[in-house]
Amino acid sequence: MLELAVLGLLAEQPLHGYELKKRLSETLGPLWGISFGSLYPALRRLEKTGAIEETTAGDEAATGPIVPTGSLSGDIAAARLRRRPRAPRRNRKAYRITDRGRALFAELLNAPEADDDRSFALKLSFCRYLDGPQRLAFLERRRAQLTQRLAPARRASGRTIDRYTRSLLEHRARTTQHDLEWLDQLIAEERAGEVDRNQGAASA
Image 1 (tube, one colour):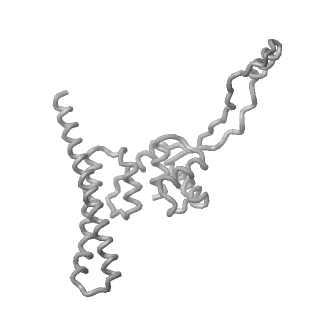
Image 2 (spheres, one colour):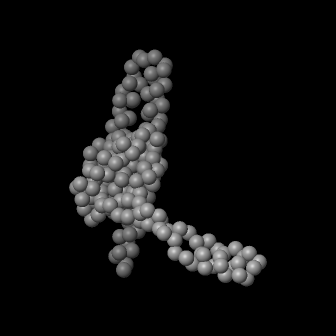
Image 3 (cartoon, helix red, strand yellow):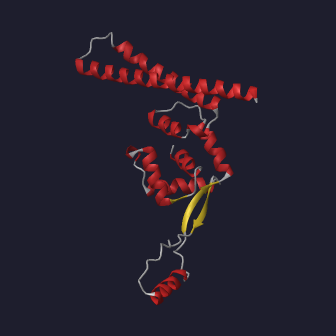
């Protein structure tokens, strides 16, 4: 999943290692424990397969407005200093996605394997890169998984269990049912959008 997250972020824009780590932590959340020790091996693997490549970006010094000094000669001297070229900072290595990387990203995003909660959330954050039918299939797969998850809780409700275990099972069932209702809404919106797109294409 780390490779999918890296490719998804680089599909938006090239990023330096530090910024990539920061964005990954925001996207994946603190429980993934993204560190440079896990990020850079993933980058090397992707680079080795040709999915990403290195690029460099110079950091140009910003030139702010000239503040008047009240002295004509002083203002002229300040203007000359501002126009004097400054040595650029050392170029920093950044990474960008390649055409092969975009193909791999699409393959990982469309992978039909059963998704756990974290991988589903990650794929959903990049769902905009899928077309309408792919998004709909992705959401319906998740709905089927959650429906199956409800079955054990319903079977357990008929057994004699202590109140703590029962409370836990009921909480899981309510959470899953809430997620199902949320998914039903997303699926309905996706289907409505697909109808609108088809009608627009037919009338064009």
